[in-house]
Length: 455
Image (cartoon, rainbow, N blue to C red; front, side):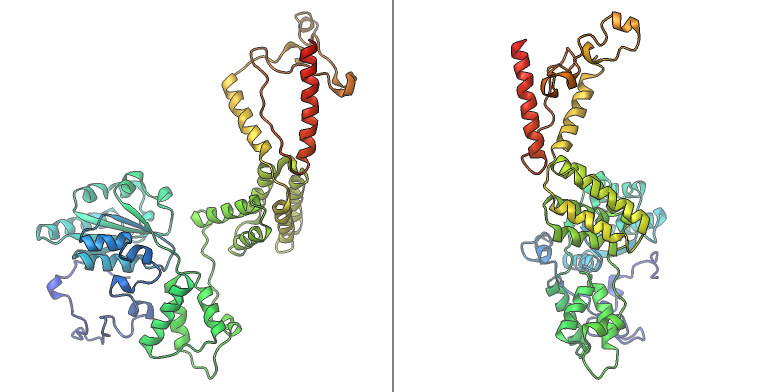
């Protein structure tokens, strides 16, 4: 690991590109020829960065800052291998700032104090510092607070990098002093450009068919660093024929899906699954279900969400949805993986194709709010229990009408506290089974209205 605590060299003593006085051969861009391919291909100017043109372009946030010659503090938020560190280095060079980098994984409070002290010394000499903090979300709340005075007084321009949602992982005070810039996952075009640059730099063509090139790009999952590591392996192999996608699977390790069960990727995918089910798109729902299970998500977690969905988004539009979801849970408990996962698929598809209604969910929320507002109102005396003679004597249960003995099985009696007007919480839709429920409610309401008029 590089020494995080060494003093930065004097800018006047920094080796020039191509300088071999250190005893190691360098390429024209200043990187050593035996450095990893990803390092040798690191962009030397902002216009060489791929996939982030929305930021680095003339009208992008970074492009405008560079044009103005002044940076604000920034938080770069994006997936791994999208260029966060590279852009930070290039930003410092573009506006003439000293670049100092630390990693929150390996650093603590003492390292931060040292970095701030050095930045003040350079500031006195007229050289401002861009402090780059990789994985900044790994600093705890107190450590994050330690940045505030140095950012506020301009000792450092802070550029933090994180793969996690800053809203959840960074202090509000720190966020308020920084501009959050979102870096995109590298698309096929950007990854293809990186592959082509690697071939030009090395003077070699990748031994891949067109289909294999596409498969290699797909395996990178938007991570440029991962792709270049795979490219470097392929450029160093000896083969007499071009490799097919099947050959790549045998030669290269398959990339594990980026998915932390307690991080944002987890919540993004479960949200995508829920919303695909709600939108009645079984194909998309099945895709996100597969994404989660392939990445190692606990199947019972997915089942809990499907059970919740059956009540929240289907409800009485199809009462069988909840039955299917619970049956899938029982089937998975009985069979385990992988056989039991087919029951999860069945429940997922059932819910995606069922008629939808959030009427029960909406009614529950309204009822809960009214219950909190009205407190401990006594139910009307006709429907309270009267287990003792005293309670009967003082009116408990008086006037109760047994609905089964009433015409049509409905007495139309009042069931609300005397201090309350009857409330309306549940409004069924005209979809699925709930259409029949709506017809019943309309008939019952008509009977109750008739009784009130007669009374």
